[in-house]
Length: 379
View 1 (tube, rainbow, N blue to C red):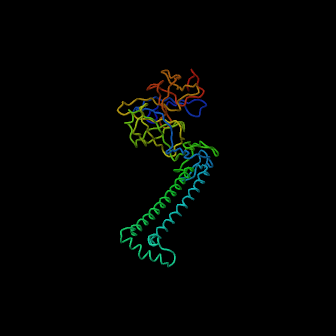
View 2 (view 1 turned 90 degrees about the vertical axis):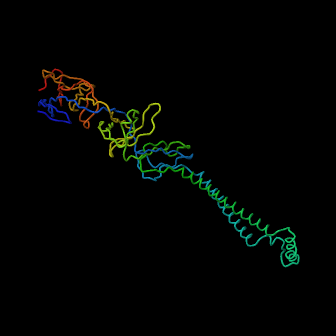
């Protein structure tokens, strides 16, 4: 009787092995036509990853957690000591207060000149003495009429001088305020804030360490879902476009096949390797961690379909040695041990492709007896 498994017809003869739970059966090997694919190695990466570095010299005073701890966007992750910067800020605030006081004084002097000009009071003497009255009534009037000592021009000069003093005082206030803002920016640089919701994946410092500008502190990543990054040869990049789905294989879960969607194709190629970096999105919930090895099946278009031999995983003997093997029935219906070379996993890991050791039409034993020895018959 025949049964169909993943597109392959198997011939079941119903051979039972004594003492085994599963029955042994002879199946006929069939071939499977598939489009040529190139399997490229890559690495699992998080969706987003940043390395937070020190912007100021100082000592580590606070670390929010360890590797694997998750935080919301805006959470405080790392703090550096800021005693020296805070002392400079107090000095800058004092200079700002002085500049504000100078501005207020210059404005008062300008208003006094505006409402009580110095040109009118320069020659007055205290009280109601005759010299002052004589000077106001005769001397100034005669000077104006004869063309010297113009009081209007002098008053305009005094107003301009006081206005310039006010502008200088305003500039001093702005300069002092800018100094405070600069110091506040440095204070913010002593704190590393989470730029998005994520997880600490690597910690390079500990509390008490002294750091310099540019030194990495922690690696922070968004682990909501993961990606595969691989280098694709230039000749194969044209076979991909954003949104395409290809097959991927991870070391997790025994190397099972997972659909991967093309998420990003870099616009430039590597000058030395002549490859283009491509990122593939994996389904949410895929088991895997950054740094894990992965393979991606890149289709080769305009190529002849290849023929592959596929056998079920349950027909492979592994206890006979390090090399995988199967039991092949000859023309006399006697089982012979054949060493084979396996290819990729298919059908969700339930079957393997065979690169060598079998041909189409061979009859192999599925669920071979565990106690089988060379030369012993299969009942």
